[in-house]
Length: 204
Ligand SMILES: [Ca+2]
Image (tube, rainbow, N blue to C red):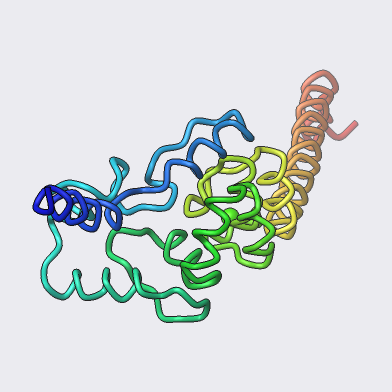
């Protein structure tokens, strides 16, 4: 009996650190209506368990060391660089600490956005990571975001380019219009000269 308990406890000890956190995935999908997978926070879209790149059984000794350091980062502000997490996943643990992260997971995964705050924008698309979490868009893909937010950001970011293109187009059209008018005038003048020749030097 004692041996059974040891086996069960050992299995739990080995299994629990490797588990992903599907509560967050489920919350994002329910809140945003968008489908997300483990790649929202993990290196591998199939999650942390397995032998594929970015999964636990593929890690070498140095990567396991980084993994263990990240797992022990219970307080915020520590250097977190877990090989099974992507930049957003590492940012969460670094910003909140694993203790607060696990509390949010148990209480309400929706609290994660406010806990992170709205300053960080890892992909630089103008949409804070926390907002992307709420809206189910990927915080590491600058092409993935609510279309209107991306449009506003792009307009604000590239207004000078857009203005220059608009001015170049206007000047181009203005110049083309004048060129066509000049060509038409020349054609009219040549036609008039053909209809009324000047007489070619005949002296009366
Ligand atoms: Ca973003």
